[in-house]
Image 1: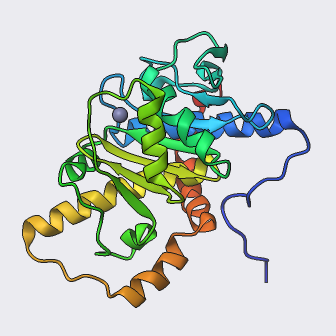
Image 2: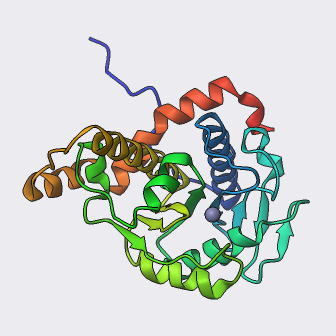
Length: 255
Ligand SMILES: [Zn+2]
């Protein structure tokens, strides 16, 4: 009998920093296309960042004002810890720098961070509550997300970004009250998967609470399920079918 296989590769190992950077940028461009398809854009809001493998105090991010659905690998810009664009030909969103630079600085383990003003995330954020373990998928966030219980306007200075990073702590996600969600991961794949599944978790809880009184998963089962669906590996793994889909549907993202 033939050996069974998965329709995608295992997490890659790299021979050179150039290969690793290209991989990172391809994952990043693909993730913006996914965000576009999922309807996560709201004007110029939203950003996903990825720490550069050679210059870890800098990160790659989307050009300010470019539609998620148009972003190609060659459009991505690299920004240093002063907010200067050191590679690429576009401006950086000040809010992207203010939030993400502080998250990357506070969390050396974090390679990527994702944030957008998606409709269910921002609706849920206005309730000022963390998410409950209502579904198997929601358990990815059980005991592993926080509420940033403040809103003072558009985040334009790094002091506010520092406060968000402090609230995030060691978690994989933060609900920024009256704003939207922020997720992080050890890979672009992981951070983006957490964002997508968190958005749908917010949607599920909003729907369930609008329809009735949901039954919560008990603590023991939620904690066990968190280890099954909420690990770094599970986050990376869950992203792969989406990557296969978007790269087949929109191969120009590689340009
Ligand atoms: Zn925002």
